[in-house]
Each structure stands twice: as structure tokens, then as C-alpha cells.
Length: 324
Ligand code: UT7
Image (cartoon, rainbow, N blue to C red; front, top):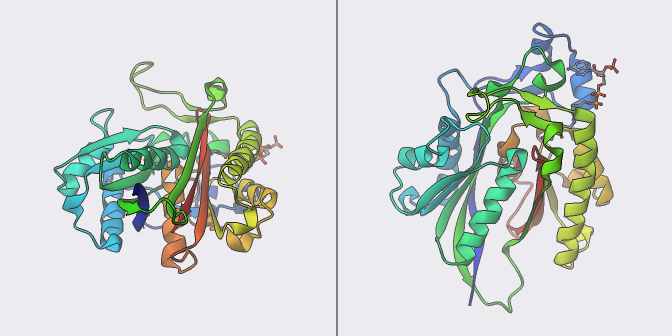
């Protein structure tokens, strides 16, 4: 028998009330029309001053655990994809472990910016398959509002805060059976493009958290190309045609990037989970937020084949194919 990992629960969390585009018009030189037409974003949520990444991760995780119908104490691995840890150390995952009351196994963070959830899923999937854990929590959580420069209108309107989580469980399967659970994960990075999207602070550089800096147009082009290539790679590796995918669950950064990937897959937008309008770019949280929305709104059903993909600072990018 082979060991495979399956998603058995999903949960998400958005903090506070929505902050609509027109509310930003009062603060900076922008318009609702510009934000909507260039990005598809209508609103975002910001964490309260005393609400941290681990607090949002906790609510999303509790919801995922409840959805999975398991005892949270049985979780023996917690991996959090985040760029905005509560503290430089310890890992946000360790703080989450304490809040959940989990005492066994390990907890650590993964830093791959907007690809953080795909990276975390890829690592946990490998650990489950090699028998290192049985029930794992994979979380994407970010408070990017803390890294926004309100003097830079080209970036500050694009991001929001949130968290999403899935529970993965190890299952023994007959290798002759058709593939289910996490079928394949592919991750990539190319450090030479660091300057296109980065944060200008850090403990070892200037001891600050810093602000987001982005060459939007260039990142856009790389996103379109890298996402198309990783999606093609994952389909070819698994001998699948695009039509066999039931749902595309993309990183929610820009509606135009998502439409471009869907077009390359010849996939109608009716098969794409689109939530960027509701929460803007929440970095590592955006895929599990979209996945949870798709599941709880009865779009994604048991047995559906879903394709998740993301690209972010690094540059990092990746994709994952899952039979729900
Ligand atoms: O999650 C990580 C991956 N990140 C992304 O995928 C983001 C990728 N990039 C993008 O989504 C887009 O490039 C943006 C949404 C950031 C920008 O869209 P764009 O179509 O590339 O616009 P642009 O940067 O070329 O700017 C067009 C115009 C400029 O004015 P001029 O020079 O043409 O007069 C900007 O100054 O829009 C102006 N502009 C704004 N206007 C109103 C830029 N930001 C704003 C704003 N409100 N907030």
C-alpha cells in the first residue's frame, strides 16, 4: 500500500469589516474605478492593531479542524506559509501550536510570499508520504497591511489581511487505484528577479519590517508566463487535459492574471474560483481562502479535480493538483 495525503477539512478567516475602494479614495489619490478595472478588487480586510497573523491563523485552523471533524490534539505537524510572522522568531506556527493546544510533532513556517501555501502544501505532502506525520495543518496567513506604504498608491490598494487552513490526513491506498488526494505539487523559484517584488526591511539588513516594493507591470508579465508554464508542466506530468480539471483555484492577486491563466487552459471563468474582489491580495492566505469559499458555497464537491497555482516575491511560483 502507498501513503497518500488527503484534504479532509478547510477553514478561513477575514478580520474586521470590509474596507471598500471608495474608502481609500479619502486617503490616497486613487479611484474605485481604477482599482476595479486594473485588479478586480472591490474591498479588503485589515487586522486590528492587536490582532496578529497567528490570531487569524488560529481562527482559520479551528474552522478547518471543525470541518474535518477531528480532535485538534491529534495534529502532529503544523506548517504556516507566511511573510508577516508575529515575531521575527519563534515561528508563527509554534505560536499557533500553543494556541491550539497541540503537543506532538513539529511546527514551522515557510517563507515563499504569495506562493507560501503551495510551498507549505508541497512540503507537508512529502512529509506525509514519507510517514513523518499522520494529520497535518497547512496554513496560509498574512497581515500584509503592516507592510503597506500609504505614500505608494501603486501597491497600497492591492493587499489585504486574512488566513486560510486545510487539514491533511495520511491515507493508505492501493497503488493500482486511481489517484486521489494530493496528486502532484510543483514548486519553483528564480532569485534573480528579487528586485521586482520585495520588502525593503529585515532583521539582518536594517532591523525594520520594511515596506512592499513592486514593479507591477514586470511582475504581471512574469506571473502570466510562469503560471501558464507551471500549469502546463503539472498537466503534462499527470497526463491530463485541461478539460479534465473541474476547478481552477488560483492565487488571488489580480483578476486579469487569473483570466489569462484560465484562457491559456481554455477554461471558462465559470470553472474558476474568484474571490479577489472580496479580499484583495492576501498573499499566502489567498488560495486557502478561495478554496474554502469554493467548498462552503458548494461549488467544489467531493471527487472534483482542482488545480491550485500561485506566484509571488522571490520570484517563487508553483501549482498543486488535488482530487477532493
Ligand atoms: O501576489 C504577487 C504577485 N503580484 C501581482 O501579481 C501584481 C502584478 N501586477 C499588477 O497586478 C498590475 O501591474 C497593477 C495592478 C499593480 C498595475 O496595473 P497596470 O495596468 O500594470 O498599471 P500601471 O502600473 O501601468 O499604471 C498605469 C497608470 C499609471 O499612470 P500613468 O503613468 O499611466 O499616468 C499609474 O500611475 O495607473 C496609475 N496608478 C494608479 N491610478 C490610480 C497606479 N496606481 C494607481 C492607483 N490609483 N492606485
